[in-house]
Length: 503
Length: 97
Image 1 (spheres, rainbow over the protein chains, first blue to last red):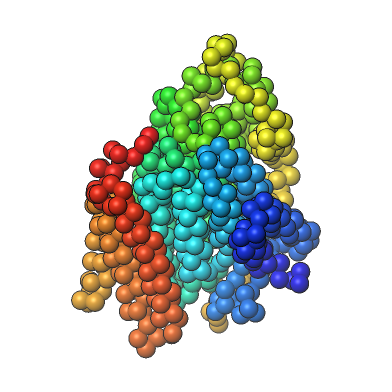
Image 2 (image 1 turned 135 degrees about the vertical axis):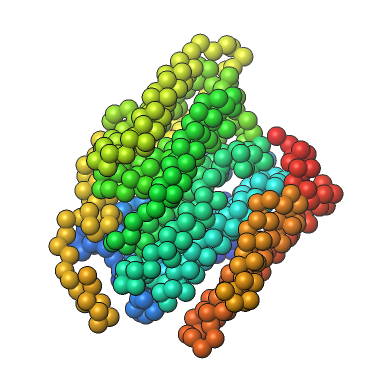
């Protein structure tokens, strides 16, 4: 049974979803516990992967015994397993909070149970995206995840608004553009397997196709990673639970970005492919427009809107790492990606615990928060500190490696962008601390919440600190093996491929 | 470029443009379906005389288009019943903040 673990990890939550759905007809409480048990079982199964991954390296699993490139391959790497563990922990925390949200928002119990079922349906889609190494299957997993996430949002709101419609439409459009990218590659190489694509592009030196596919992938993901920017998804904010927004913006968006890393550096990173100057300019414009969102976030009067802009703005660091493309920068990008997953979820969970049943949360209501709820205030300070890059948070080391990468490449444009945003955020960070520890009026008194309710937020804040404290171990065990082979100091043999000698 | 390839390109470009630039939600859905139709046609164009895989992929892509398109159409129907309009500016004005 254990030799099928990569496939089982995708099957467990799906089976759990069906079970939870069936049980919901008998008891809603039992259905919720079934969903939690399925997520927990999946998390334990992911943790069970690590001994084998550390002993034998990447786990290549052929679905149905059909070997790649003809068959569909799942590849579990130490980093993707680590990422999956964080994904499942965040899903468990979201599930924990959604129960109380349902109660506050006055949702019927049946909707609550169905919400759990849809969360369980979304998780395998995201896990599949992390592990599958076939272009078309990837598209199917992505489209499946978009539909499941849209259905989840529709289920957990009292009135389905246009926000859900836009999510489904733009998510599906992004998926269509990704499919177009894969079809371009398939038409020119005759394969959809990621490893095989790299080899074929290298042999036939079809660089324009690789560049076109790269542009389509980026465009496709841009339609998706802009979630939950209020520019595109404003109708969602009044109606959707911040816990749900937090899960999607942290896990969905960051999973997508990790797969973009896979496409860029394990599929299209063809030796000899040089980037035209025009594309470099487009990359700078994209990264700087993401960085500008930090300024927009600082101007917001509503905490929920501000963290939504912050969620999008932080992607600029990851894209900067991709654009720099050297070992230090990619290490920084993956470190940032991991940290951002926890930070964004933490921010939205705090917003959810402060606002009742969704809706707005003006900053004026947060004055003195750290005095009335010291642990929540402390968590907020830790999350803000990691965005600024204060040691020893994970965000500090992510940015450190990015700056190192920019220095090594002598890319002063990106270096200036990273340093400017860090400086700007530093000022913003102090303003936030002053607000949190300021004196509040009696009218702003908040009801006390139990330590149990705050535990997931505290765990995420602790996670951000642990990522920083143990950054060397994380880089050595998880991030370095995920980098392209050229950065791993491995001897590369001159292996004949399909009868042709590779240069 | 053959006429068939020009048709594929036209479907994809018109569809992509419509998704982002139409203000009617119904037209947006139709545009997305056009974009998908372009991709399905592209897959079918790869099939004659070649491997069977593109045909299978085309059928799967068409199934995805139908199901997601149906979902989007149902949402449009719901908005039509609720707001008596499919114009996104009209709807966004009336959505509670």
